[in-house]
Length: 390
Ligand SMILES: *Cc1c(COP(=O)(O)O)cnc(C)c1O
Image (tube, rainbow, N blue to C red; front, side, top):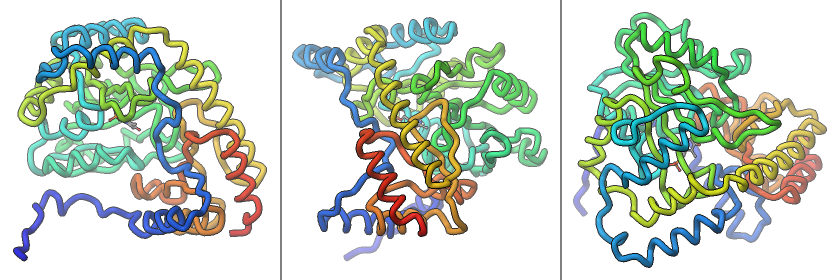
């Protein structure tokens, strides 16, 4: 057998930390244990039926069977621009400032290829959604971690970045409401960010995947609402969490037209657009009744309340999140997050995500997702209560 070496850029990716944990999970499942999986950030509810019906209708039409337009259907770009205007009062030119994506993950991971040169720095939150770091490394850039700490409300300390780094930094990723910490950002944060980025000539990449998943009347804002934001940045958005459409693969980037054009050029060399039938269903999603968003938010909110009060009754330290479907939970003893997740799995068959998997500053935490039923959440807490000495 001939041996082939993987590329340096692939070797440079951070090591996968969960090999042992995944093995243990698979083994427990195979042996028939009743696993409660709070590990995955994937909505458990189905896509609303009006969207499924729109896809069924669209797929019957043979004109959807051919290559789609790389840059997305004009109708979808218009629907996205209309949605942004309704939701955030942000005006976007659908022709130049909106780019549909095959899920926002691919756009996030491809973006650095368009704007980073070898050894350019990119400012990355730590902990973070892994594709920020992966995309930067695959593009030959160097990720510079910005620790998200509880004492700073899990916001990055922009003032603390050394000048030598700022000189070499080309872009910064921000993500609020945040995965994994579930923290939110207020307008002041975005105002400072626009000032910081303008002063230092740094592109802002804002990931707004969770803008619609919020509780207690809170309505997350968009970075693009700030004056001057469109001069220096773009925002990624997705139908995945809002419409329970993670498997469909449809999202978008919007904002600064030069940044959009750069990403579009990379993509035109890599993919050939989103399946047209899915684009048509996406238009229906954005333009239809948004009632189900209220319904899923109340569903997650009830689960959140049960899990938070359950964990607090065990003496665990946990904040009540205002948005996202995650709890970011401080590990109640001095033990690393991978070991803690292993113990939880072994002793309770409850799966959680170790915080260190999202970056070094995630150590000391676990992430629990609210994507299982109230009944299962209650069971999970009771199982943990029985072994709480671990
Ligand atoms: C789920 C998620 C996304 C959305 O990913 P898609 O590729 O659009 O499904 C983007 N950012 C974060 C932080 C997420 O958690």
